[in-house]
Length: 84
Image 1: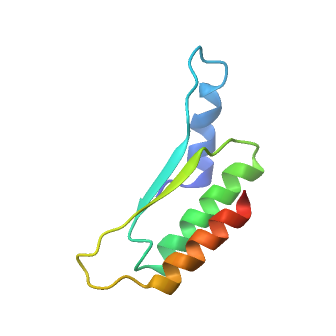
Image 2: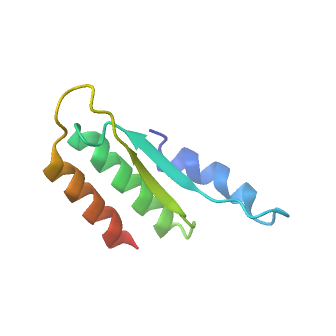
């Protein structure tokens, strides 16, 4: 997970490019780890507050560790949706 500070230093350099770049954030294990889910929501929120456009957020699911925490997935999706 990149920190918002590092990510924000790199992204503005894409402004003014001839092509339309999109910013997608993708993270794994958010269905098992509250701290990972929280970090993804925090990063997304921070980027938006800095005026950067976030085109999408991916929650990459891996079910190799058993049943995911469905309540955590739902909560993470709700919190990300609330940022829009």
